Image (cartoon, rainbow, N blue to C red; front, side, top):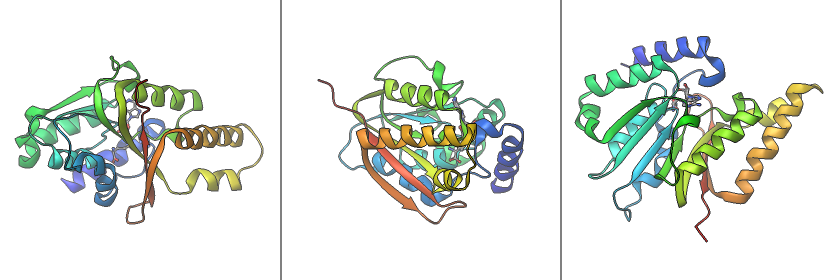
Length: 216
Ligand SMILES: C[S@@+](CC[C@H](N)C(=O)[O-])C[C@H]1O[C@@H](n2cnc3c(N)ncnc32)[C@H](O)[C@@H]1O
């Protein structure tokens, strides 16, 4: 499985780098950091959103922590990755056991309908890889889909954006990265609840958690 997962991810990363935005699946420590909210002992049954599950590195962890009555909706834009994930739910006995609680939606997250649908979201979308308007639209889509007061957990590879800004020459890319930094740091200032540094990952990553404003 691990070999098939890596070859699938690398192939998609080569063919669809803009949407894949990584050279490999997230490791277990990053997956655990992203699942922190779902492991809260004091919660009832939840509707959980996973944006960009890829080959399922984080999905496998989410499934492990699913409780009776929870549902997990995994929205994946890439048909090959969505098919890989569907196959995992057929072939992997631990995942198959919880398959009735999981829906894999092969779609662009932007097109997922509804408002205030989910109790929490875990996001693997590579925001820094997208043009800024797309990042803003995707962030807005996630915020639309989340209930007031709920938590979004997402990650960024540590320091990469700032490093590219520091090393960049004046021009369009530098302007885009600076504007992206302003946008993501702005969201963090407004909604940031906590961050968690995960050193033990293929590329060290920062797990960020944003709390949606409560209604009223
Ligand atoms: C960096 S990979 C993360 C994969 C996995 N969550 C992990 O951590 O290993 C980003 C994933 O987001 C998916 N993706 C990118 N844009 C998307 C969109 N607009 N809607 C749904 N999925 C998207 C990609 O196809 C890819 O599977």
